[in-house]
Image (cartoon, one colour):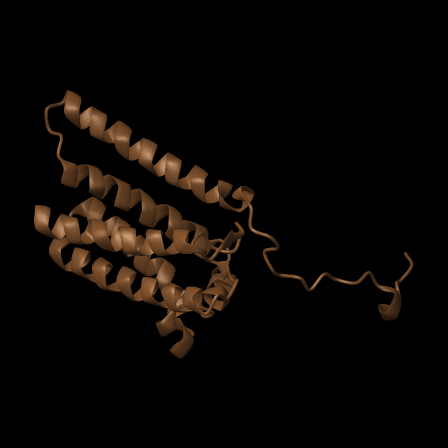
Length: 182
């Protein structure tokens, strides 16, 4: 086996940018959201056929799927998520370890909602966490910084854009609606 001298080793690409944004950047996110909406819709349809449909249950189904999926993707590269999250989350910028905890917070939200555990407290916490997260995204967008959104972890390359704001503030809005529906 021959050894390759270090100066002749292939150069590694240092480009970690997203390149020009196209619709293809959003395909993974569209697939995930479509699956979540379809699943919530199918479970809601089941509820309709059983005579137990409610809008709050349907919103809860979607939120459970969202937090399970998004928290799970972050765990695939926890270190990479924490590093990426610290580029735009206000709390993670001050306390880097928060990036290691955040995916577990999302998973806790999902599991607590499945079990209907302390729903009012969980919804209030979701509302605060998602608004706070959205503020960090908004500040980066105001500065027009193009960075990698790690909302789906580092496995999928999704840009930090208004879609990220919609995710954060959308989940905050659903939490607020559920607080008033209950």
